[in-house]
Amino acid sequence: IQVATVGGAHHQHQQVRPDDIDKLPLMPAEEFVLAEGRPGKETGIYEVIPKSPDATGEETNKNDGVEPMQVGEIKESEDQISSRHLLEEVQRTFIHLAEGSKGRCFDPRALVEACTCLKLEFDVWQQNDASEFVTKLLDRLEASLKKWAPTNFKYLDHTFGLKQTRQKICKECGLKTNKEEKLINIDCQIRGKTDIHEALATMTEADVMEGSNKVTCDRCKKKTDTILRTAVSTLPNMLILSLKRFDLDFTTFETVKLNSRCAFGQTLNMKPYTIEGIEALEAAGAKESSDPSPMETDSSEVDPLAAIPDEDYEYKLAGVLVHAGVAQGGHYYSFIRDRSPDGEEKWYRFDDEDVTPFNQASIETECFGGKVKKETKWPNGQVHTVEQEQFANALMLFYEKVKPSAMPEDSADTDGTNAEEKMEQNSEEKMNVSTSDGFDVFKPDVQRTNATHKLQSFLFDSECQTFLKGLLGMCLPAEFAEDQEMSIEEWRGSLLQMI
Image (cartoon, rainbow, N blue to C red):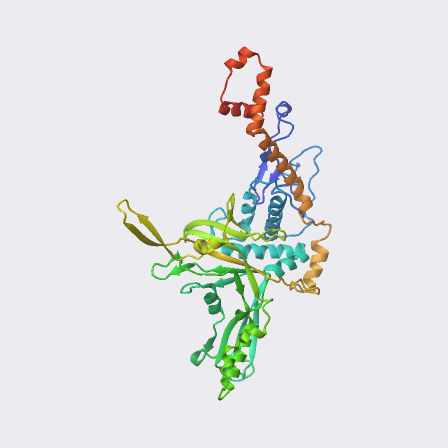
């Protein structure tokens, strides 16, 4: 059978002789099982190439009894195909993690290979910027979900999508012009900042454009002094903050990593960085300046933001992504809080295949960065103190809203698709194509790998090997058994040959 990979390379398998087939086991090993793809709902990275005439006019890939796949039902570009394949690999990954047996690690190489379509700065098998990866991954998933699963697209957009508004305020007529932009995360400049609040406050700082930098006002019809500022207009249920630790050194023009200390708390109130909060502070400042002779001193103690309820702006830390190393290379690992409804407030460290409990009281020493002092005690009793930078520090922060906002009921047009796009989606692209959530497609694969894992775990268990060794010893003559005493290592090799 001639097959093709996602990259387009063709592989022609030679015909196998019948006597060779008799020597093969009834069930091949897991790594030799080929998952064949299907149009519109891929379950693997291979698809069977239909029969096509060669240069001599004869059909190639002749296999009696093998039906060619019906291709061409879905009209997609190569970019759309790669995006859909990435979505399917994400589905496969989460189903394996949810249904997989405990103690078994999931091999993510298929998912990594599918991420080639993200067009990251470096190869997918090399280290890339995590913030860039998250942004491009969610953008690709949005594109595929918007086409094949609009309901799930709205959920993804509602969970991670935030909106940032750029305001232009004319100082002469007071005209406010808002330009809204959808984002996945907030980039926080941490150079010279001590905590996350200073970094977020920098985002909302107002710039006064005057003199030669005046901006044209739509109402005044001339260039006027203008205030430009940025604030958050819509908050997501999961807020992602990217700390800009990789910066350009203008002396050497090389990318360097900023290991300076940037503190953050277990909770975060985003009210001061939203449009509502900035306008409340602005109104309070205007009221205070308009009072010619303030007689009451209590007014200065009143928080202008107190009138806005906190429940829609309170967040709780859900996870931290840490980068250990320098700008040219390093290692990523995460600290994640268990957010299951019936679970306790426990934190875990996810470091490749190692998942261990983590004490949240150590977040400051593990994630804030900065300089640490290390003491070395010499044999003569003297203590030598050295101060050095901490190369492991937080790169991305994930905050979960304390009171998540519900999905809007009338959200048919929140995805931004117009009538023409919906018509194309419902007519041409979904014609004769069945869709699935992926669970029923990938669950048999998960069950097969789980069964293989359980079988291997049973066969390689020391108690099972000891039992089999004793059982075989009872079946052998006593003289032969004494001459054939072997170590446990030799027994493992014999067991492997037997399998």
